[in-house]
Image 1: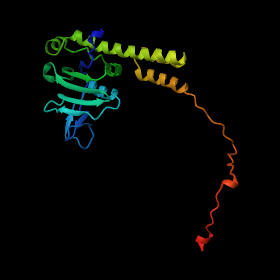
Image 2: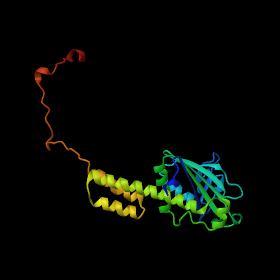
Image 3: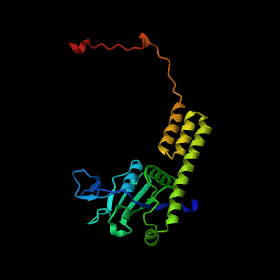
Length: 240
């Protein structure tokens, strides 16, 4: 399944299950929360895009590359998080867009493969549904892409991220030794909880740092001064 992974970019298709007027955009095209005072129009972002933006830590403010018109759920946004450039397209793929499940998202990422795989891993773990399961399989196959290949691509990214996290756990075990947090990290990985894996490994790293504390006298220290080395300056003439 690893052959589904591209060296420079990833393209994945996701079924949208829930959407509402949760966002807007300002005059510069910046995506904003619904209540932002600078908004000039409404955007139906959808559950996939909202979750994706949350799991991309430290991402820049998303820009509306294609602003919605009459259909507030048809749009294109892009943003960057570190070395990963993300673009999301939202569009109707069947039924004239009358229902939310008529919509799909095309997710495109450019950047290091390991980081792209981790984003996909966190996205799938955070969603309430499997994004590769489409409401209208036949329409997706005929209009968008092959549904089986798309599912395999999703799963290849998840597999790669799981392997990377597993290797990180084993590397920490070899370097720091076995402990309770190693088992916690393994259990978190089994639950597809990447943040919990990293928290457990961070605790191991923190506990392994030796802090040297110098001896300090509770009564303080006395500075010894040699009187012969202290110069004497007579300022009495200046005061007069």
